Amino acid sequence: PNSLPTAAEILSSKTKEERERIARHRGVTVCQHPAARHPRNTFRHMFTPLEKRSAALEDRLNGMSNAICESHGIKSEEEEMIECMDGVKSEGGDFSTWTPLGLPKQNKVLCVGRICNEAHEGRLNRTSIRLEGSRQHSSGSRIQLDLKGLNDTTDQKQPQSFSFFPGQIVAVEGINSSGRTMQASRLLEGVSPPQETLPKSELLEYQYGAEKQNGNPLSIVSLCGPFTTKDNLNYDPLEDALVQILQD
Image (cartoon, rainbow, N blue to C red; front, top):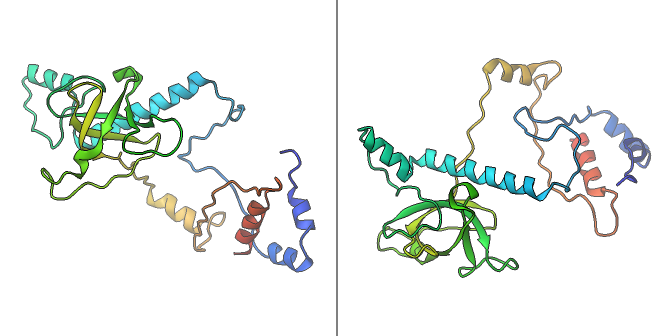
């Protein structure tokens, strides 16, 4: 909102003791992380066209699908056929071959998709969980997930624990004999992002540089909004958090 108070107005509302205590502390610098991919050009917040939203979801699903398959050594049927034609003998992995969603198969396959709620309202339950495939490989089809096999201890030593939420991208191994319902037997809940590394010289410069930490200990504060209350939009919680950061 345009009626937000300025920093000068916030400081003027403080007592003399509070202003002196804040002045003794160095200022807070807000900057973007070097690896961040925030938009840098002018854009209309929350007015993204539907086609751009759909394309972003599709890219996210395809990217996570490739990361899961690469991390666990999962190959598609086409890749296995090409290796056989080239005479390349690959070792059998621990997982089934990757298959597009919705294709009837009598043997175990592995499908990657996005968790959806069939009811569109309310919480997820065992009867409303759907797996949605990508438009590129599965034409955006959805199938029902039968999760009883994840609690079956016949083929595994102990039941596999799992937790779903709408929009979660997972890989599910099981049998999809009808093309409409998949009897899940194993679950892969994504992969961790690659660990970021920096050269030693850059870390030393950041820690001991005169314009950086200057040898002082590094403190990290994590804030999560919304920073408004029910009765106003003055961002009082955010103001209190920033004042506390200055004091600490």
